[in-house]
Amino acid sequence: MTQPGDMTSEHLLRELAPQVLGAVARRFRDFESAEDTVQEAMIAAFTQWPQEGIPENPRGWLIQVACRRMTDQVRSEVARRQRETTVARELKTIEPCVDIESDMDPDDTLILLFMCCHPALTSSSAIALTLRAVGGLTTREIANVFLVPEATMAQRISRAKQSIKSSGVPFRLPSPQERAERLPAVLHVLYLIFSEGYVSTIGSHLQRLDLAGEAIRLTRCAKTLLPEHPEVTGLLALMLLTDARRAARTGPEEELIPLTKQDRTLWNRAEISEGIELLTAALSKGSVGLYQLQAAVAAVHDEAARSEDTDWPQILALYELLKRVSPSPIVTLNHAVAAAIVYGPSEGLELLRTLDTDTRLSGHYRLDAVRGHLFEMAGNFESAVKHYRIAAGRTTSIPEQNYLMTQAARLDETKAQREEATAPSSNGT
Image 1: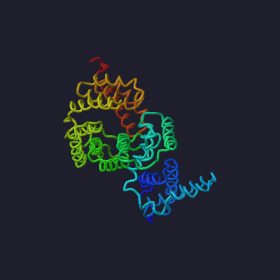
Image 2: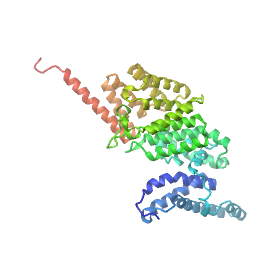
Image 3: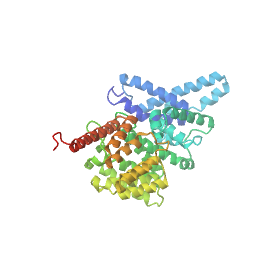
Image 4: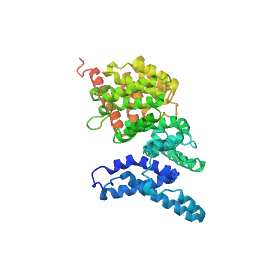
């Protein structure tokens, strides 16, 4: 046993949860029950490890506990139905728990990811379930990702589990053909896990390094499985080119530092070099997709030595292409910023008006935050302050909320100074 306090139990449990769930779900072929028993094993570890110390093989410990509880559930269910022949048959299909670690796949988390993108589910349901099982996101965090109410997402996840259970399709490692069919959903899940890690939508921390790091690791695994797939390579490039700025994104108090004000000497040049190399290889395949285009935007930012050196016309052209390849309200939002910088804020504000009736984004803090930024560019400080404050009231991220309120306060002070400077003197001179 590792002595108590040698490592952070909570961080370790978060890292191990998807690996354990993948192993147990694969063995017992019952995702919903496996998820319940793994949660019970996590609770047991959370209670015992701080007092007794972390086991030498923590993953094996968790699998053993979950495995025993799954076996108990099977026995209890079989006994309840009083079918003696089924008892012998079902128990024979369960291999001894002591051996479960020995035949584990080198990466059960990646297997779990493909397994969650189940043919019985719609794409959105599969992605939501995977974010829960693999990414460890809460229902509220997943709801923020999908821009829907938390109650709606809770129902979606519950229905996803029921659909898998009632479909009769085995919950197992998919065949190579099935992997190819599920790949778009898998890549989207990895992208969303990374995004939540890079800009956490809830809480006091801007970044969740565990999520971002796990998304990069799993994407590397996916690239090993499919080394020639341009979008897998493009997604890994996008993650690396974005993650390269991580150290410069927050100040000493974890305050948000926008891209234009970051100390670029803190950017990870090794990640930038690898990302550009991967992007170049992906683009050479001749099939340009969503992740390659986003990676290209990130590369343009990363290659600029100073903020003012950024090639915004090229970024604008990439977003115009993105709108044709994979239109979405977030792409339109970013396109509006690029258009405002290239052609002026009025052009960007006009593009934003097309999002006011889009139910996926209307009322979301990002729309007001960007609108505030563009009004500031236009010199309309009163409208900028208004929208910064609206955005601050809608975000659930404390660092983003603080940043937006700081922007509003800064413009309020600037506006007051301008008014004071232009006010007539009391003595009439």
